[in-house]
Length: 153
Image (tube, rainbow, N blue to C red):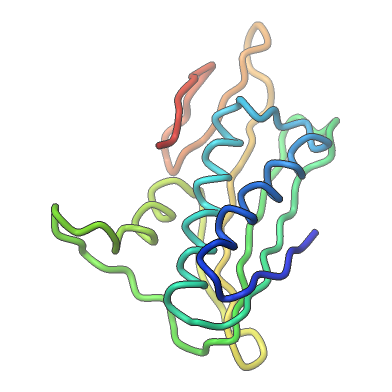
């Protein structure tokens, strides 16, 4: 599945809505922590592409089938800029500069690679198998959360 992104900040909201609509048939409930993390990662990677490149981009989302209990969700944003992503150290008062740090902290894996004349930045989230008594376990970076509910703000 993919979505064409124009170099317009309004596209970030459209990308989040598109990703949410794709979750329905994947077996990942909109209220699951994995869904919240995925939407935050979509927001960060699409924002980076729109703000830092000024080029059109493509958002790609690979979701597991609804019956898969253990699977990997992959998110990619490809743009036409050949500039490598550069993580920044934002000061406490800065309103930006934390996007790649968030991606690094929330994704199980992430990276980037050249793609044509541009690049693709990707991240993956692992959805662990059902654990005891039906509670699901989610991995956020190196930490596993069992039956945890939280909201990404």
